[in-house]
Length: 358
Image 1 (tube, rainbow, N blue to C red):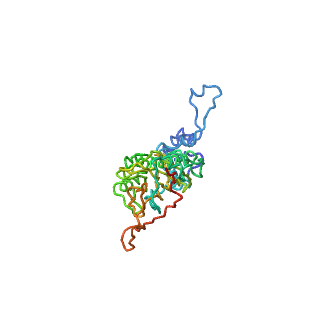
Image 2 (cartoon, helix red, strand yellow):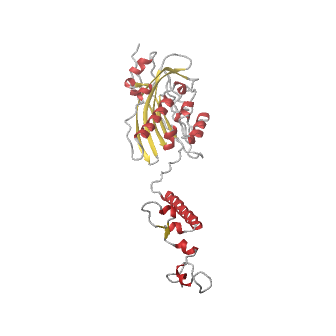
Image 3 (cartoon, rainbow, N blue to C red):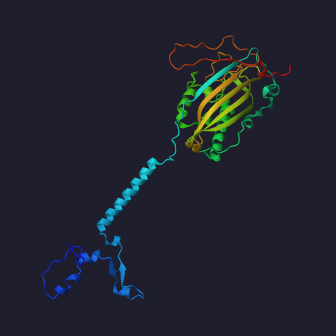
């Protein structure tokens, strides 16, 4: 074993004895110099005033270059592994939003007991109906105050409400949509995952709770019905809740009153009323992209006959017409496929306009 005065790598080899024998204990080979903790300054460095004779060598300087590289690689690998682990185990990881659901629809026709009242003056019809105090068009689609929720800021809440209002206005008040025309403005607001269902509902409407065009928007068959006036009386409310840390939901409940007449024939007008409740969902991507998921749509619409085929178009009974005596279409409990049951309601006489007699 080496003594205290021996170099780190042992006594250097060489002949014994000679004039250097007495200085053997102070001979410094290369390994001894590399292991030294103190290093003498150069002559130029010692010329500076107050310069010490020696400097302390740090431990890192005494490590070989290859070992330095190895240590750096190990430190980088350790830091990377820690970052990956913390990312996977982070307790505040953003929750994943639920995927868009299919729209569920229900349309209930309201049949009148007597003939539908009509008048030449649309103003008289509105002024003598329960819609007399309703606002005109989009003025009746008002928004509540926006307040932040636990996980959504006030601005995001307002964005959800504003998009729900825009969908409501474009799907229920736009004259082009109401008369069976261009519905692209409604389609552009939908989340991409619902576009296939929307397109099928418009191209092949079905009264099955999933593919009714009138569940998405309000429209009349232009071959049968025309708008007697572009003014629509409107009243309703919105409410908003945080469905999850990843999604907001908006519920709407609005009543729309339309003045309609026959597309061909008498000019006498009558009123047609639709009460529509809907439920919308917005995840953070929807809010950023100005899109909406329409989850539920429920309509009460009249005056209509109970047997009206209203999946493609709403079919108002016009001035002077009566509801067909037949009740709702039959439901076959043995038929395969989605279960649906046709429902029909009676339209209360108090909901009809009672214009003064000429």
